[in-house]
Length: 181
Image (cartoon, rainbow, N blue to C red; front, top):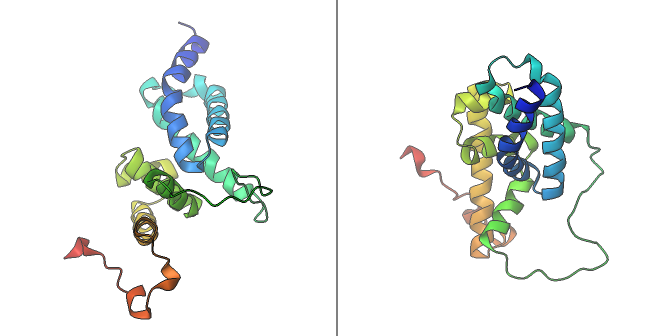
């Protein structure tokens, strides 16, 4: 089998998982598809250099996250991407849990979002996520803790129908983390 045929086979089997991960990172299927295509292009360019074919999926995952983060860094802060047309304001129907979770996930900063996706969607260990992101395990733990705290607070409010601004002052500080007893 030629290297090109090997890559074609790899791309066919790896694309669905890469696409799902890309969607969780960026929150839009069209952007996710573009992200996967960019990732596969980069992997193809390096394909002959990848000595261990069993490491190709990990290489592709790291390339995907790095491409996503690089794209986020290069976007102008004034650019606002939405999936709705501004001309047609419509009151949204009661949101389903999945949509609420995706919406809250989209509010996280790119690196925190990447950590959440890698740790809890891809089911990577702290060390594996750190290797993909090119940072320390402590950084992954810190980003995960902050992101999960924000997700818990916002999801609790969104799923119960409470607006955080409507809380009484003493309630705003009662979000407790029961993991440590």
